[in-house]
Amino acid sequence: MRNRALQLLAAIVAVAIFSNVVSYTSRANRYSESYPAVVCPPNQSGESSVISLASPQTPVRKTGTSTMAFDSSRSRRYVGGGQAAVIDSQEVTPITWQVTTGVWAGAITCLAPITSQWFVGGTADITSKGTLTLVNSGLGKALVGVTLYTENGVQGQQNFAVKANSFLSMQLASLAPGAKSIAIHVTPQTGRVNAFLTDERGKGLQALGGDTVNPVADASKSVVIPAIPQQTGKKTSLPHTLRLLIPGDVGAEISVVITSTDGTFSPAGIDGRVIPAGKVIDIPLDVVMSSGKFALTITSERPLLASVFTKTNSLGKSDFLWSTATPPVEKGTFAVSGLAPFLVFYGDNVSVDLNLISARGNSKSVQLRGSGIATYQLSDQIRTFSITSTSAATYGAALITSKSGFGYAPLVLGSTLTRTSIPRSNIRVLIP
Image 1 (tube, rainbow, N blue to C red):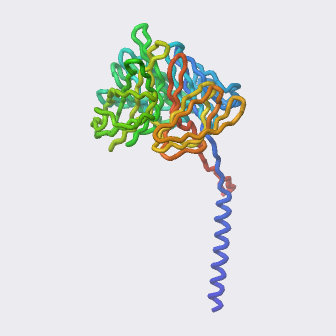
Image 2 (cartoon, rainbow, N blue to C red):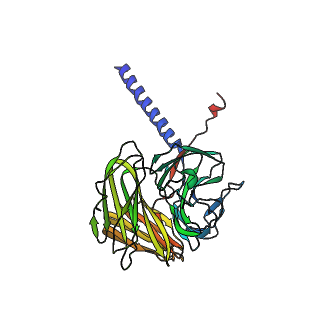
Image 3 (spheres, helix red, strand yellow):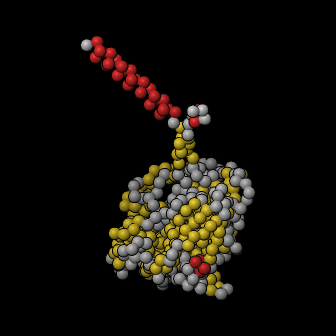
């Protein structure tokens, strides 16, 4: 009996000691939390750009220098240059407005480096003046895989080396000579890499417009493009073209739904169409929406990629715009100083709460509610807007206009909070 009592006591003591050890270990574990810096593109020849920031104290550095130190931006409208901008914007997502004055304009949501970027847009035919730019903002050399898809199928992957803290620009016409319709998959193998695609076109001395093409991370069985602009005239509407790619080995039938404040319908000739695998397919999208904005939803049994090419006309000047797919919106903050974007949200039952901060620091709350499409026009006095609450399966994008042209920016968070375990020092590592 006494032995059993001693055994029970010993067991209780052992459990208590083990609990204290586990508790100590749990308390001793430490973590570092941070937002990876985002990257905005460099300007090509003839281009200029302005990056909207939340604060004039935002830390910024440029690639192409020997130092990796950040300096204060000194402005909420940071002027881009011939080098890419690396921005420690924390939870705020900057938006870049890129312009070739009097010719075209485009918007880019600046993102932190990711391991996969798909660009569905652009051409490599005789009119192409577009470029693919690979930016390595890291400390070591990067190796980047680039795979092109055309109307004739997939090309073999090409690998490019990009020096540390630098960028490499390539003409689209040299990557896929003569291809009319292209899609590009960029997969960094090493390095801190961002890719940027500019689709600029011309015929001789005649400018045919241009736009920046925002990327998506992966193909999906359900694709939503939430904001497609519609310009209508007295007799005709400017045309759209739907670009599709199923990157796998097996094609699939697609279902397409168009939604606007005018209603919802499936376009004839597209809905139910079978899309072959591995080829970039362009389909005319003949729709006229008096409301001026509409959303497009595509579903398929196979993961696919999609975008919409839209002809535009500003001050009698021919231009175009690429509307790209987005994931569901998340709570976060976007910097829009001087841009005055038109926000478009799409979902079965849109319920989005916004908090607007003006250039003077004043705050305003806005509630957007609707079935299908809900919109809101920001003034040029708003420096940031935050999505503080959002309904499930709601998608969003910003449409921006200027004298030089139109732009599209998906409402995707540029950087998300990452958590890294901090190793604990242990003297036994040095003294066994």
